[in-house]
Image (cartoon, rainbow, N blue to C red; front, side):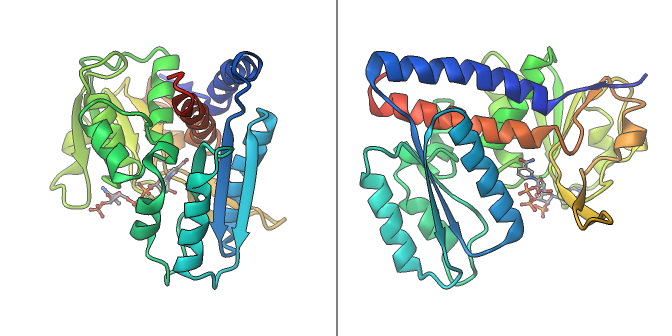
Length: 295
Ligand code: NAP
């Protein structure tokens, strides 16, 4: 069996078209323009790329976009005061603080300072709690994107054995939570593995759907999966550089070998990455609608 390749790029395009229409309607019928503020502290090259992609995606959708690039020595107080200002700004519906922050800034304090109604990343404890009880305003972008990749590729989630490798707060735990909900596009039996799991293969081999967010190249090899599995590879690992100095990326799954056994698989790049960015746009539109009482 050679796997169907689940293209995040293509599915993100579909969602972008749907959002374009929604944004036009919001403007025409309600004079409402969704607004997103991105905040970057320091000059981490990967973070600069991510913020640039988010800004580009906002502009392409005519979302009002504000970028705040702060120097690496910005104090926590200065950052908190910017967040306070953005919390109060009616043009801004979503605030995204790019992580990681420099070591002298308390990341938790900063994330907690964002108004939960503007927390389009879905990382504030209020939004984490709402997700947990099945009443989310915002789903965090990467896990929501993963769910959309599965649904829009026609993968049956309900009743499936889903195995998640990784238990981070931004991917592993929320995707497990989302697919566990007694809802359409979910209702799966979910197992979460991590470095404390005794026999990871025992679990991964049982998976109908395997979601890997470990941050380790080739953490999953072909002998660890069953024939016909659907694999979502979240990992982004820089494994070298091209002659031109561009990073060579790989996921967490041994793609070439696993695609021979899988029914469907996401590539890296071009899988989870593009869908994550479009889900941020979707959350920004939702935030604008919530602010206007339209959602
Ligand atoms: P993280 O915070 O480092 O968490 C990694 C998780 O994987 C931890 O729970 C860890 O277990 C577990 N783990 C690591 N190695 C393992 C192994 N060999 N077997 C089983 N479990 C293992 O990472 P993250 O933030 O979730 O990100 C994971 C990967 O996804 C990274 O490569 C990241 O760059 C990528 N990512 C991509 C996107 C995107 O948009 N494409 C978005 C977010 C993240 P312990 O808890 O026991 O340490």
